[in-house]
Length: 327
Image 1 (cartoon, rainbow, N blue to C red):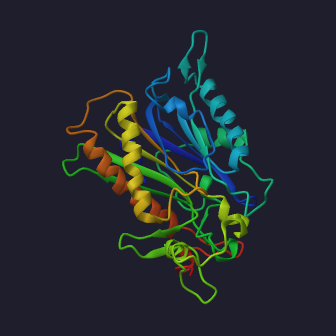
Image 2 (cartoon, rainbow, N blue to C red):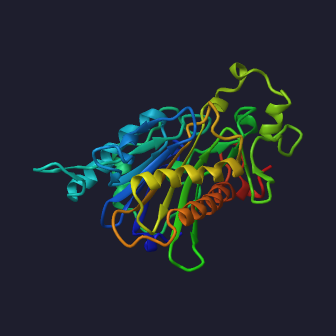
C-alpha cells in the first residue's frame, strides 16, 4: 500500500526468532492530528490522552507506535522519541521539543517465540528511521507474533499479522487508509461472513468462537489455555483531509464497525482493542467531512483486517491462511 497521498510513512522492525516486533507510523515531513477510540477492556497503552482535544497538545502527535511485548514493549517508544528529537520534531516547549508518541501494545509473549523477547528502543528507532510510504504487510513488525482463534488455546489457533487497506471517495476528494494488527481472541471473517482464520477443531474446520461461547461448549474462562486470555487488535485509520481531534475520535469510533463485522467476538474482556485515527494538521476540508471519512474508514479497515489474516503464513505449528487456507 502506498501512503504518499496521505503524507505518511510506516516502518517495521522485526525480531523473527522472538516472534515480536514494532511498527511506527509518522508524518513524512510534519506532525499529525489524532483521535482515539478504546474498544477492548484489556489495553496496554502510553500517552493515549495526547490524542484528544482536551489535552494541551490538542491531538497533535508526531508518531504512533504499535508494538508487541505487552506492557514491556512500551519502553520501545524511547527510540521513536530519540529519532524525533534528533530531527527536531516534537512539541515546542522553548529551548527544545518533546516528541508526542502515543502507543499501544499487543500481547505476543506467547504462544510463539520467546517470552523474554520484547521490542527495544533500538528497534523502534530503526522502524522510525526506515519508514517509507510503501507499507509492507504480513507477519512483520507488530504483526510478527499475532494469532487469532484462541478459545481452545494455542493448539487450535491460527497465525495472523499486519494488514492494510485504502479507499478513495468516488469524487476523488478524500482517501482513507487503514493499518491493523489482528491478534484477537475471536475469529476473522471475510466480506461474506465466512470464517477465514480462527479457532480450529481437532476434526478439522472452524469451531466458530461466537457460536461455541453461545452454546456454552467450553470450560469456564479460568480453565482456558493462557494463550486465550491475552489478545488485542490495534488499528490506525488515516484521512487525507484534515479533521479536528474531536472529529478524529468519532472516526475512530465509527471505524470500530469494521472490527465488529470482521472479528467475532471482539472487544471482549480478554482483548485490548484500540483504534487511532489521524489526519494532516492543516489543509482544505473535504465536502461532507467527516461523514464520508467515517464510511471510508470502515471499508478500509475491513479490507485491512482480512488482509492481516490472508497474508499470514504459519509458524511453530500454528497454521496460517497463506499456507493454503490453513485449516
